Image 1 (spheres, helix red, strand yellow):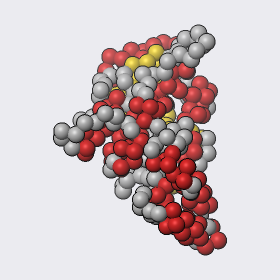
Image 2 (cartoon, rainbow, N blue to C red; image 1 turned 45 degrees about the vertical axis):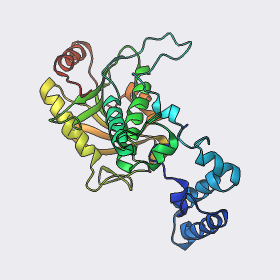
Image 3 (tube, one colour; image 1 turned 30 degrees about the vertical axis):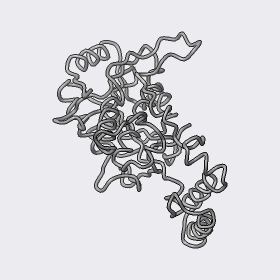
Length: 309
């Protein structure tokens, strides 16, 4: 699995420049180990990050592989460049997949490419905009666009396996601007789900029913923003959402499913991506639509939906 585009550079974790000597790197590693150790005021998570950074650049061979972008943890450009369209059927799997509309990750990927070209500069050839070395040097706001696009594509690929009883809409306009969007809408017998796919490049946790974490921007309120956008779509389509789901990579979630606060009758949830499909298939107690209601909701959404991309 490739690193997130927002993953910390090992040199940043160790607090040295990429051109530091081997001796400087070793001294920095020892210093950061002492600082990050839980017994000296650090944390186990930070201590693990320092050790992982050292594994990436601590030996001449590992450092050379990292610096050329050929190590397994570099976030290979090929993986980042691969765009999911909702998930190709797995080889040997003949089961019908969910009906899918829209282009997951399309808007953020286009924005990433535009800003990357602008950042590199006019007249400069950009042979591979997903080259790991190039991505590492880009400003965080540009890398976040790529991370968000990849997160949406991963979620869409998973949702596609829900089966023929479900319908998916991706990158749905939910406000006055393209950033006001729902990443995914999922409709099936277990209800109507609004889904936000995110990658903040760091673990998240829950405080007072909202998602928080060091990777979030100042004042960022993911569940609140998701609820606001879902309300726009619900009003236009005359439907009601059953759940509001924030999806993150497994290693960034505090547990597989964490309850957030309920907003306007829709249950908020923070979910590991690997747990999402089973959660939606199973549903929430007492929540669901079926029969004529399911057909009517699908028709209303299909008639009112507008796409960002």
